[in-house]
Length: 418
Ligand code: ZN
Image 1 (cartoon, helix red, strand yellow):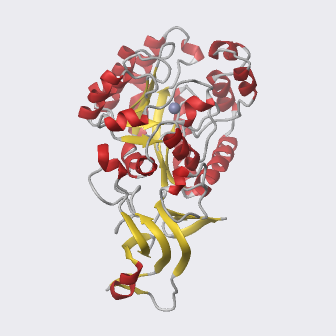
Image 2 (image 1 turned 90 degrees about the vertical axis):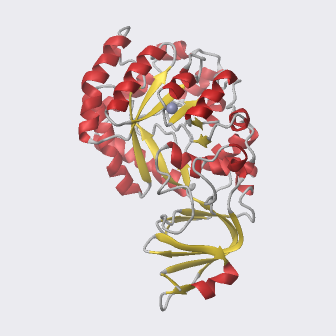
Image 3 (image 1 turned 135 degrees about the vertical axis):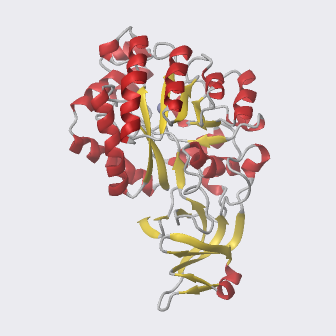
């Protein structure tokens, strides 16, 4: 008999995502490891048993005095993993949506005082307390919408001390919010105003001084770069990523979001963990991603928020054998916190099947941020991070636009209910 201190019954479908190698690719992305009429047992915040509810009594002993929690015939999914966020920033850019609707270009918006540099200015000016308060506010909503693990990129300070400060806040935010957070150093988010027209000099600074400082302090698991015209070209990005790899960082690339610059091919060449966005990547580069084992992290709400005609090539990447993951790309430029909305866009815009969208937001997203041992699957030994959705079938979550969880559990504790 397996000893448990918590048992959940009345689960119409339990999507375990516990079948097959990680990351999932091709047809395996559609396999959710569903257990119908299921139960789930936990001990000290970890899963100890999953299976059919009728097997429960024979296999699991619940600690004396405790009663099973009846989830009322609803579907249970692993907590979402948001594999791409720019969570840490000050201020907002709500005025820009009107300017975008009026047809202003990115550089015209910057001239009106908007764009990324307005967020850099606000973030540099903000106190630690202000940054923590606003990020925590966002994290609480993310948590309530089913996200239990998320990546957090730095990149809105663009000074050495400022970037270190942002990264130091991440563990504090994880403790305060209860969300499992993975930090990524994105000093190469844009060329800081102090280095205008001197991107080469800035990259040398990052390589020689900033990266070693971040590495010594153990503040980031990944190094990312914004590889786009006007930001960092392929040669500059490659120099930074090779230096980061030598220091032990995992690698990520913001690749081909606006222009096909060769960012995806670069990600394959440096064996990055992930290439992100890929809105304009030529399909001829997909096989390179597939054979290098690079995960495509798509943020299908981002082109929508940019009023762009581009769409995330989810279907095409899955068909090419590339493992696909999902993220919100939460930032002041595309302010989305709700993973259920991302899943719906992944289906209706990026053309993943509902099952593939669930895989991309759980097990594959966990792999994209090297959390595959701790997140994205509901199996014995793993943290009991899961959400209860008010639907009978798991695939109804992406099918219904923006379905919110009725309950969210993190390490077996109820953190939200509605
Ligand atoms: Zn991004």
